[in-house]
Length: 246
Image 1 (cartoon, rainbow, N blue to C red):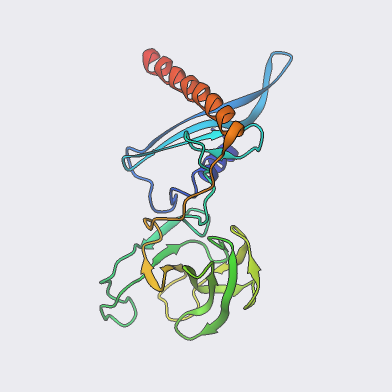
Image 2: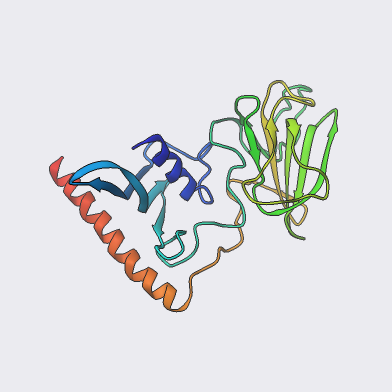
C-alpha cells in the first residue's frame, strides 16, 4: 500500500478505531481499490472502494457510496460519526484511561480521567466533533487548554498545548485544528491530555458509546446495499484466491 492509501484507510475507520491506541498484534484488514489504467498500463491507484478492518475481535466494514463519495457500513450507516476516536494523528500514547493512576509529578494517586497522547511538539490537535469553544485559556496546571461544548450532553477537553488557535465562544468543526501539542502546565514531558465528558461525567474516550451516525434511506439505501453486497463479495473472492495461492 502507498502512504496515501494507509492514511486514507485510517481516515475511513477513524470514527471507530483509535489508531494511536487500539491497534494490536493479530489485527487485520482487507481492501478493494481502483487502479488507474492508461493503454493497459497501471499508472496509479484510485479510491478505496471497500474495506474490512478487524480490530481486537471486532469487525468494521466500510463501502464507498458512488453517489455521495462517502463511506457507509454494510447496513447503510455512515462511517462518519459525531466524534473522532482520537483527536490527533496517530502516534504513540504514554498513559491510558486509568482512574487510580499515580500522578508523575506529585506522586499522589489521583484519578487520571482521560488519555495522554505523546507525540512531537507542534503536532496539530483536532476538535473531536463540531461545537463551540467553552474556554480557551491558560493556567499553571493545565497549561494552554481548550474546552469544547458539543451539546448539552458532550464536552471535550484538551490540555498542555504549546499554543491555542481558537478563542472562547468560537464555533469549530470536527477535524479543525484547535492548537498544537506541547508541554505547558504541570507535566513531566510534552503530550496531549484529552478528556471526554458525558453529562459532566468523565468517560473513556476510546470506548464510550457515541451517538448513532446518519443512515441512508429509501432508494439511495437500496442502491447502496446492492453495490455493497457486490463489493464485499468481490473482496471475499480475492481473499479466497489469495489464501489458495499461499
